[in-house]
Length: 269
Image (cartoon, rainbow, N blue to C red; front, side, top):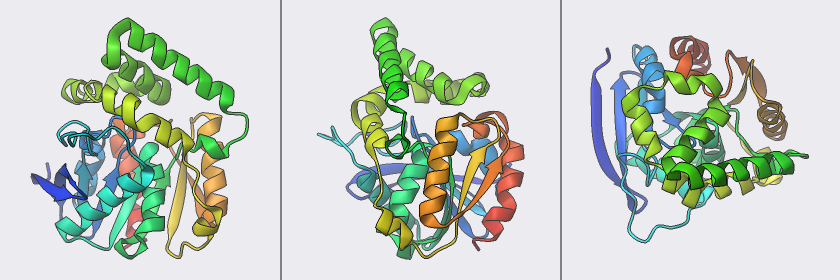
């Protein structure tokens, strides 16, 4: 196993827990719902032989404490957190990998802090605001969350949400990570989710991005993720590629995912 360094830094008015593995050019991994660095543990271990892999718990999730009085967020705030972490660790400019909601945050990071990013890989950003015909699916998602909240509170709603997004991959999540994820329900549903659902980046700003970007879609993914990914690829004039699996291959196919990412990350050195 690669040597693991952990720590907490002050960044953008909050404290962010982070993990660093490996050596070589740095890459920042950004997670989506439940915001835990542990999503990428298996992938990071594989890539640490030639890269410095940085993962972190997003603000108010897992080991990154919730700031006092923090009851709302924006994708801009989340991007500023990531940029501040990169500066604090002295790894700017950095390659970025963002998945799901993390791909939305990474998109905002490209637009707000291009000087700190040397390129990005964006995997299945769920930008439902740019996909026509998704209102019914979003309504069903909200109804599911409401039902599970009533049944078992935030932990039950988190499990239902992750199963909805990741499918059978949920059962491959290690117990410790699963427990931390379940504890992030109040942040996910009370602070973050609506901001993810409403985010629509400026098309003019996307067209002005001048760095290498790759968009990835799962080979077994839901149509909504593919539609949003194709929209974003078109606006960024980015290459669209495919990654084996569904929406969360970092849970059930970490080694395969790492080897697929390896040549793409080499292009961003």
